[in-house]
Length: 132
Length: 385
Image (cartoon, rainbow over all chains, first blue to last red):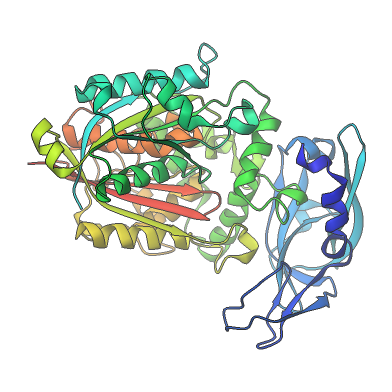
């Protein structure tokens, strides 16, 4: 299965471990994912590190997860607007689901995701915790 | 544009442990050939929609499977665009005829989903989202639509939980009247609200099921269609795309690709939303049907709930939606869904939808979405006088 590949994990160290994204040099718009063209017409991008602070735009609690996530039981995933302007997707943890709401401030934490396949590749990444 | 529908064929949808990918496809193909009353040698090209066979059955190269089934060697291609694969295959078939290269085309859709575990299907379906940005975080397909539902119902609170559930109730009402449907059972609002939570706020009865099935349709050029007496024509086809991931989308309270595809299809057909007598829309989740009726112009954004207050969307109502039972009750064999929609539209326009027939139906629309809205494809069907 593709998720067992250590190479994919190695390639994604920067964005998954350090929330490194891209900023258009022409208009300053920020992206979490690689871009070649900005809607402003810009084609040059600088790497930037996001602060990890943001607000929940929408959220849900998953009760029936894919194979790799069944060990988590029920878990929350949200779409988050980072203060720098980029929008990303991530789990929100260390809280009661009932306490979450749209607009709630969250910040990034470094977490283990899961271990996969016979090789036992450990996947780490960024999750979010609420700032009550 | 004027493409004739010569024939249709569909398998019973459901948990088809008795048949594999090949047999399901063959069954639909043979039924369509019989309905069209043509011989297999008359087919100039084949297009087959499929999403998951590579992962769920270890089978790719569906194009060759489609011709092998019929002992022919014509051009044949498998088309993939997640849950919109069927409509994309249909559009490719139309374009093959429009280009002048083909006169008669066999378009099918097939999906074999119940041989494996729900978790494996969940993983496969999530391939329709963004694997790196969404799948890696444990997001599921119901989860994507739950995020849309939460954002929509926060912005437009007039869409209540009960009205959202009404989408599923209505689709089961229709499904009970459709013989190829997976779940032929009427339900009520409590059935939906009290069912198991899948991804808050969506419960099991807000979600389309896991289904095996295949569907085929035979298209012909205007000239051939006249010669062979086709009773239904496709007069508009629109396709639009958007970002893979929801986080990159311009809005979380609509599916913009659906609206763009509808506008393109209506323009080509020379119609407006007011001319449409009924529609088959992509209700992979209840919230998706609300966004679909808005995308198709039957209601303004935020006002889709109004159609669910007074049975307007029932087959005897003002604008019948999903008389087949929709993805919810009829089932959602992913690659076959777009073709099933085309078949339901054809049956309605031929007057063959017994038990759920829309009166005086002249124009019908199909609306098929891939992923959380990364692809949307709309077709306009017309009764031939």
